Length: 445
View 1 (cartoon, helix red, strand yellow):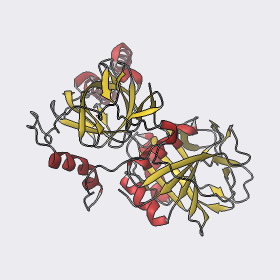
View 2 (tube, rainbow, N blue to C red):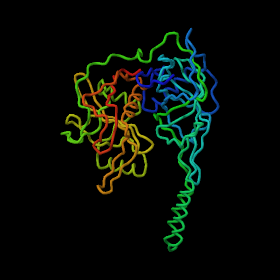
View 3 (cartoon, helix red, strand yellow):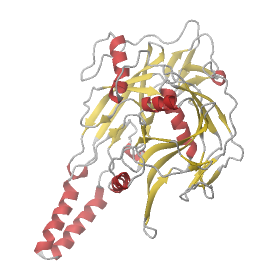
View 4 (cartoon, rainbow, N blue to C red):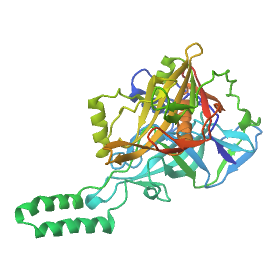
């Protein structure tokens, strides 16, 4: 038994998407549940829970997934410890299939329901906030729900130490002895200074000591893993749908030849990022798909936008739509740039896109994840630190687009001369399997 997250497409949310902005899209799944459910509502805010029914189809074997089985998920809306009360209903989208003996038992991109079990804001003296979640209902087939017991196992933007074995998320580590000693040292040094100079230093040290700790928060669109805490028994459909011959797969067209890497200048003298995504569709389809996934266009570089982004990165503030550096493909700068912001300006998903062939509406893209900040005081430069394994970011983009119902993953291709490892334009090391994911865009479900 295993998970398969590589090749399936996303079915729709079983109702028509409302017209409106991002808020309407985020509320669409909750509106669907409220319209289809007839059970009594839970205590606390949130829509009614759909009724739990027996799982599986007629004459199919019963399959048991043991405790400890992991399932990738994507959060639909933002959750904050201390703001979202215990009992609040939580809806997430699964990103992987449950597979047994090469048969798909539970399709990907279904729904998983749970509730907030613990919610507390950050406290004085740096005590971190807490947010606990427990999941108890899995949609194993359209409108068919199966009881399940699962907790959070890992978070995209959370350190492993921030997540307990019971799935409770902390807003950061407790300040502990080190922070108290540093603060005490600051106050001791200030006491040796003249009184006029000691007051502001002591006030600053006192503020560091008594300020509230960080909140525990989960971003809308954040990817995570849940872990089964009890075995899950599902009745499989009588007819086996093979995982390696999924009916949603369609034949891929012949692709035009293209370079395997970008460049730092028009002549390509210094190689840049590897090309790891191919998009088939119109410019309008690309805009619609990424908008439904919650991604935004990056701003054009300017003195104002760059200053705002650098400041936000230094102080760990947010910078939605911050500009990216220019790279070139076949002598042309990027045509489109999309990004998905992280918890602050140092973290984000982003990809640069170039039109490859106007006749066949073929585009190529380089996807990267920023995971920190690199400052070179000698050169007086600052740039984002890029995650070393670019294949992880490629697969994140694939799952994000499939989950919208507007895209299908067709296949993986290996461009001629594709590098398996190297350094990008800023000198940072990367590694990859050399493949590009081919994604076909379509009318949204």
